[in-house]
Figure 1: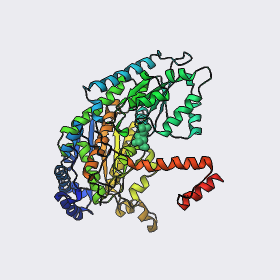
Figure 2: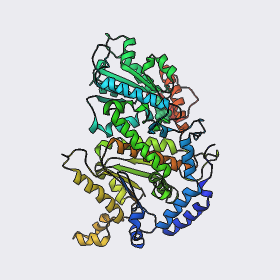
Figure 3: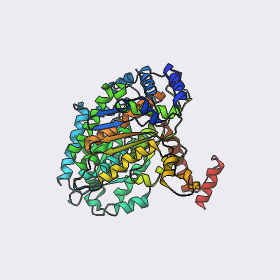
Figure 4: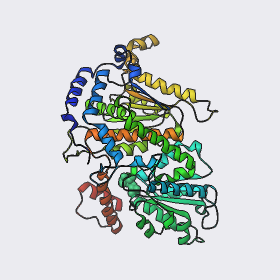
Length: 530
Ligand code: F6P
């Protein structure tokens, strides 16, 4: 059984939503607060150590009820159950979608075996027992991977750096050899463990970088020893990793039912376990697993990923908003947005529906953002006074990580101030009261307000809470995809560029640009070669 295929715009509820949107589209959120005395309670979710306030959105109770009706009409619950049961939801690749199985409290044997391997390697390396080719213990972990084999682990390792042990971690992804060499010039290869993460073990960037590193080891280490003592592989393709030269016992599995961008809870997260410790890795998994239960069992109106996805549909398909900003108020989460970009945009950047038809509505918002308060000094001007409608997720923490943090109150004051400023704006009258400047300057100081935001207030940035936050956004992506009637778990859109790059590389190497290219690309290649 696979997912139902319903064009959402043909449902009864969609039509009702459209009519309701026409009615309330210009209304102000502040007026909704006046009209709906219980809005704050109704439009918030208090779950574990998370408090989600979505009352500052441009939707009234009636509109929200209609969104819930849409979730019912499209039977989101049925889709979630099918996902968790392991049905083939990724139909274009004939695969199940089971990243939730990775973090269940009682995983199946193969998952447990991989977790045991992660624990054992973590113990061996952190205790100093794992020795390199010249007998030195490991000090550095270098993850070599790209896309889902890089972004998730990198985001978590950076996000939880406060909890790190004595090992230093590095991430090599791009094929920018100059940059990579400079980065790695800081470390001694003989004290480093390289983890080649590639689900397919066929990604050119990853394999190319790994091969260069092997070559650059000191002469005293034979290639055999380098591969045995300094290289681990994480892949579904054990044979290819063996052929590459990696020792069988240093190869950890993932499975085709784990999508690359949903894989950080598998052995793809080995660098997380190594630099934060296995217990913290398990905590991350526990946090994600608790959200998995919440997502499966909670009613729609209090179901965090479902509510966030429904609001996203409201802005994308009724307000025709094109993007969504995410602003975490923690410098540690500086890699969170790039990670989310792959989760959302590789999953839902699709235009053919589950019925092979071209969609006639918007899918896949552009996800962007940066950490606060930095972002306030960069793109917030456009959020406050620009012409575009951009819903924003504000993510903040009640407690700082360190008791000695002297600036957390200041950081969080900014966090709350921004959501209030976006909502309420500043009228001409208020500007007039404040200034004796000449009238020409007034319009530039006015803030329209009525800009939507959702506040995600979390107790503290812990491994468990980060695991929960990750799972919330994973499931939000899923619900969006179910409603948009697309296949969220394939990524055919990345293939064409890969194919063309192979033939272009050949032509650059042979200096023979053939006729079968468009005029612009041909001309650019001639310039490059000249
Ligand atoms: O090119 C896109 C992609 O396939 C991503 O989906 C994936 O996360 C990344 O490349 C890396 O793939 P692999 O883990 O197979 O090297």
